[in-house]
Length: 196
Image (tube, rainbow, N blue to C red; front, side, top):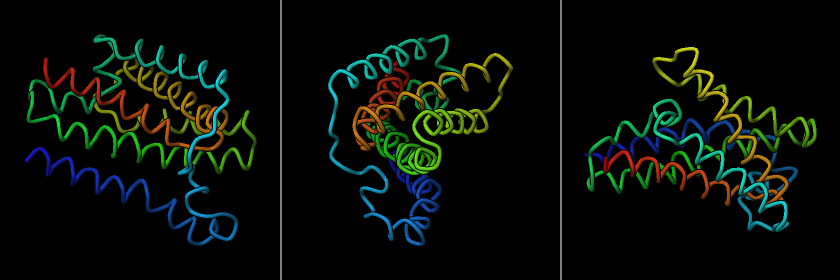
C-alpha cells in the first residue's frame, strides 16, 4: 500500500509540477530550443572551483537544517514514514528522487528559474525563484507558527538559491546534479525517520 501511495502521489505531482512547464514549452518554448535544453535536462558541464564551493555550502545548509530540532519544520513528508522501517524504503526512494528531487527541480530550477534568469539575469532570477520556492513550501506547510514559518521559508529559500546557483552557474544549465542532491537529502532524512 505504501508503494501505491508513493506512486499515486508522484503521478499527481508530475501533473501538477509538469503541466504548466510542458504546456509553456509546447506553445512558446519549442520555437526557441529543444525540450531537454529548455528545462536543463542536459549533461552537466562544470567549473570545479565554483561547483565545490556551492556543493559545500549546500551540504552545510542541509546538515544544519536537518538537525532533529529543525526536521519537524523542514521535512513534513518525513513524518509520514516515522517508525515504518523496511516497508517504507521503496516508497521513500520514489518520493525522494522522483517526486521531490526530480519534479521539484524540473519546476523550480528547470522552468521557473530559467524563465526568471532569462528575463532578469542571474543576479535577480536565481533569488526570485528561491523566494518562490521558499514561499510555496511555507504555503504547503501545516500547523505553522511564526518560528516554524520562518524556519521553513528561510531554509527552503536558501536551499533553492543554492540549487539554482548550482544549476545555472556551476553546472552550466543542468538541473540533473541538483535533482540528485535534492533527492539524496530527502532520502537521508526520510530513512532516518523511518528507522527511528
